[in-house]
Length: 461
Ligand code: GLY
Ligand code: MN
Ligand code: MN
Image (cartoon, rainbow, N blue to C red; front, side, top):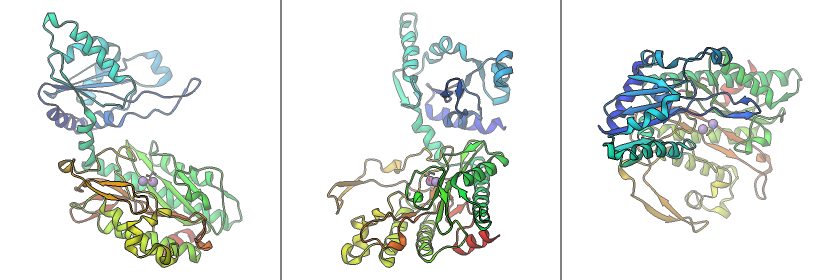
């Protein structure tokens, strides 16, 4: 680990706190699963961003003059025999580039003095259970000593705002980690696709969980700590359930499989979706809809660059998908009218009901505002032609180099009156991860093929 990376981030944050500000940040709590078993521990993303430290039961205090103090688990040979190595407060400063470290047991005793004389205390609002109460307690004990000359901070401010802006633009280290996560996840998708076709060719039954197992195997074998989110492996009609999870569904020859899965590597997520024919060959209707989704994704990719708005890829996607719905007969032009009508009335919503992307980073749906900060407060109003409800449009975030977002159009065709039967129960999504650059974007998930020809060739192999 290179502590200077984290030291630099903390120094940048300290400047934003103001000379008399102080920030308080705990890492994530351990979570009980049942009885005496815990869920696999995952640190808090903000905490890790500022420390690179992965142990539970740790707090960070940063003052506006740039001084960083950590409270962490003390060394304890008996606990370390059972639970593993602890860095401990003696070794932490040198290892993590801190100014000081204490045992977590000293937190209540030390914090009031660390807040004394500060003008604002910053902490993440509405994030950690009971954090506000804890801070109130420290402020209260400081206030109880005013007659001895203590000075209590007068402002409480949300630390998330500052850290969200910092995390929104990924530095070189973050981009490199995300590229590696994208490569591992792409390899996992390839492995699941090839296994699926091979087993069906050999006459073996295939279940969704078997493909899930391939993903996990590939993630872990390359050092990923865990999946970045619950993997979706959806066979046939299950693909039309947006948040379906890998389950026991049978994967049938002739149907499509939608896999939305990405590994987390050293704190950073990847998020890839591929949809492929279980037996390796698209049918005519599957191919028609797949080519449409792919064309809509290409349109979105083409407008993703620094200076564009976050909403531009979505609008580009919708235009292509809506035209395609008219062309293939998913929408009847005699009923819904022209392309403009379909977009204006959101008639495409029946088959495409989610946004085309989100920020990606330490969290799969990463932090960072979706509105341009300089334009917050500006709005325009319009009426939804279908429902009459008022829609307030706000100016979307302007993309900058180093921002990372997903581009993930889809089509989900549930059986309904007037919907051509050949398309029933087809669910398709294609999702890639893009680093915004000055000239366009770098797709870091294309290690797994995406065109019809390349997928079919891969699955024959
Ligand atoms: N896998 C979550 C998403 O695509 O947003
Ligand atoms: Mn996504
Ligand atoms: Mn996804």
